Amino acid sequence: MSLTITVQPAGRSFTVARDGTLLAAAIEQGIGLPYGCKDGACGSCKSKLLEGRVIHGAHQAKALSAEEEAAGYVLTCCAIPQTDCTLEARSVPAEGVHPVVKMPVRVSSLSKPAPDVLVLKLQLPATQNFRYHAGQYLEFILRDGSRRSYSMANAPGNSAEAELHIRHMPGGKFTDHAFTNLKERDILRAEGPFGSFFLREGEQPMVLLASGTGFAPIKALIEQLERQGNTRPARLYWGGRRPQDLYLHDWALAAAERLPWLSYVPVVSDAQADDGWTGRTGFVHRAVLEDHTDLRGHQVYACGAPIVVESARRDFVLEAGLPEEQFYADAFTSEADKHGA
Image (tube, rainbow, N blue to C red; front, top):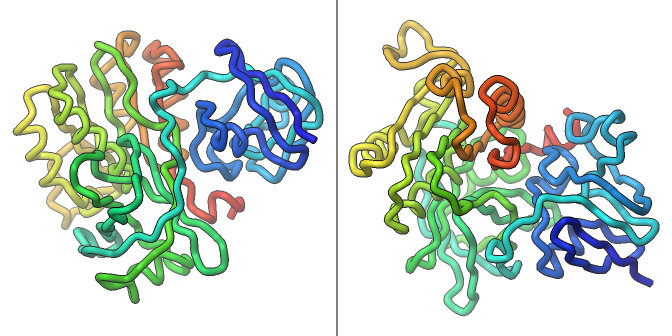
């Protein structure tokens, strides 16, 4: 037996099996709901339940507080409907929905632009029509069935290759293997694309905000804008604790030099005396506010650590008047984040 879910204001409907989650069913049926981690940790899928009843699986309080739940909000990634439901959710454009496919991918190259960052390039199967939007991510399916998510760092194009930026998490089930044992021509199992983080239409100037390896999907957005012949101004703010965390700093400098519509502001929060850093310091989202006291006419694309993304969302809206619907984000959640560690 299945239940019917209606999404407002789009007026679209889909069905969910009695033991299924709202988000999984929506993805399977091509319904564009916003989401990020799919694990109840980031809050990107938070929506208002207008009618009906759901029960929630495990999730983080930072993603959905008890007060928000009492006010009728749900996380579609872990909400299991008990009745027919009506949701109020910001709809993702239909063109953002690409078929999700499982596929083998082959490692074509590995490089380390920083000691704790691996740039992994994957050859996609020629027989698999893997299409994605710049900003989306794929999931590796490990031998025990667990999954690890990484954003594509290159825009889709003629090359059947995907570039990923992987930060080493000591003790991490996948990253320990990737940094010590993974080699060229190895085969991995992957599924994607996932995520509702991608470019939206508009004429307003853009702020591109990244922290750490949150730069990966932002890099893909910049490549996509370049291919589109973009003329909208965009300002890239990339933050790290130390200068070496800006692991493709030269790439960003060259892009800003090459593209008249792009400017680049690197920001370091914890520079040491021996770093020789002479650039901006402090929290990267505060650097945005120092330069933009009024964001009412902007779009913001933010990616990185959850605390950076959520601080930016809050402060940009409260302090600079950014319309909340013009803030698009992908918060990187580690396994520790997902399990509250």
